Length: 459
Image 1: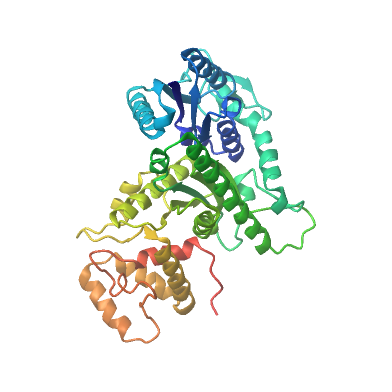
Image 2 (image 1 turned 30 degrees about the vertical axis):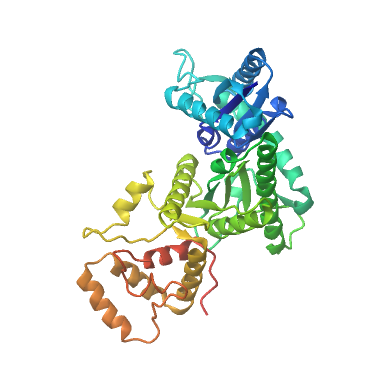
């Protein structure tokens, strides 16, 4: 028998995405990614903010936890973790022992609220970025807390590491941006950023069902490799699609923020979010070699100056919404949900949709989330409508969707009298036979998709 130790980083998303400065987020991601660097062993594996390790004694377990605590306090202030162990881990019955350890970890996380930073010392001024007590003055003469200082000191290392990691596809001509305003701007539109959050489906079950440590190590390594390879292919495709006459280096319109196991977050130019999310999930499928794997994605698009933490929080909620829809449909496909943030007031996804996408008679002005097959059809139909419908008629359709049912019936009679305003949606006939089917409509989704993807100029 051995001691089985598991360590789980807490509130990773909050730690990484709490700042409106992209460099702060990049630095925080770097600290998370390297937190377990010195604690790996041949008798363990690491991935997605978790460390599992077999130890020979209770003293070894305590030593690992103590050293990790010191690292969190000294190198990654503000970061916390949960740790637990069992003293009868049977490697010959790995599946049962690992399941018991996971159950113990979940109980530990549910009953313990950890705090590693004080909101104030009572005598310190506040950090200009985080609200924590300030401990120093930054290069821009602004007060910084130890949390923000650690992230900013790590940011330059992170930028260099990522540039080196993708050097073979970036070459000497392209850079990954370290500021939101470097992601690109469409001169015909306001500047928008898309935050994409992608999470694997049932990956935890894949680990629990494995029968040995070696199988877990292999799966962890394969997921990590597939994610990085998929993103490298994403970057390579972006490079190949850019036509530049500039001699200076050019920033790509996307930036990875966190790739940890099956948990991926990246930012990009606003109108590339949906297409890049779909592309990543497809490349992830092809890169994963240990069977079938699927993902769900959430894409939140907002103006570049919108609070980034709220954008990522919404993207994570959209990802969960996609996962829930996948479960309702009992599907094995990839799913995606999306939202374009148009209000300066932050609300939960549920509140946003109840307030802005539900009529007084209970009908819903959306049908999202969609499977990736259906989202592909939706994009195709959006491009067709953009090409064939006058802008005035698209705006009229949007307005009609919010009106009472008798107004919609009158609109349908007028529309059907014309031959050039077809509402037939290819590949989505069951959804779009009428304006509303089963008290839901796809047409507001279709119109909003037009604002979230690149569209060709009207002929």
